[in-house]
Image 1 (cartoon, rainbow, N blue to C red):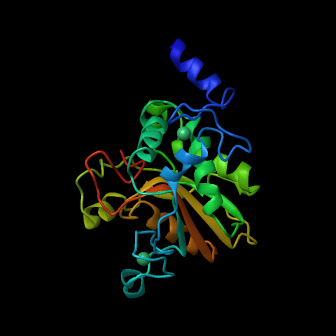
Image 2 (cartoon, rainbow, N blue to C red):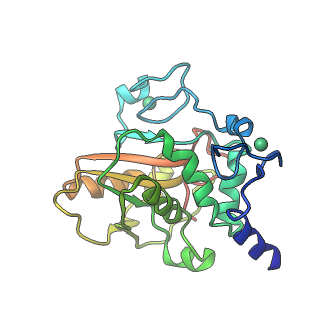
Length: 243
Ligand SMILES: [Zn+2]
Ligand SMILES: [Zn+2]
């Protein structure tokens, strides 16, 4: 417990040493927790700007997106689900270290070129929320909202608990989340462009029904902000909150 509180209150109070290599961070600080050299671990890789998957070079839309467009316009991510990035996501999501939402949001925010009108996030079912004590995507959304100076609002409710996504193929995942989400509040008529925050995006089956709810309520453009984008449904991954 003591370690928990020391971690929570010193991570951002004493940020002068790199969290990865332990060396002093030279001013101007490129990031509160990482030195210039270690930041290269989070360097931008060429991706499809639409689905977010890695490509030999950056493209507006890859072949898959041209054949079948995702439900959203742009996907912004920090990287694949690989160390050291995956370690911070794990700490945020499973070890109660919600303050790493700031660590990750500050890595993601510089990639985002066009501000939305509103930032929202993937909701947790109330039982999962009680178990974890917080929604990691909500914390990410709050941090991005502060950094980007864009309003943040929890638009969605998860009205049905769903099975673990682990090991499911896309079709099973789509079925699993069917009618699991509802819009919890009305959307202002002048809100045309919304960004949905998720921690890890694998197949997109979680955010697709959320996109449909937004389109049905007048939203015209949707972006996805996630920390990790992976095409591999690894054993230790789920499509974020679907547990
Ligand atoms: Zn370092
Ligand atoms: Zn694509």
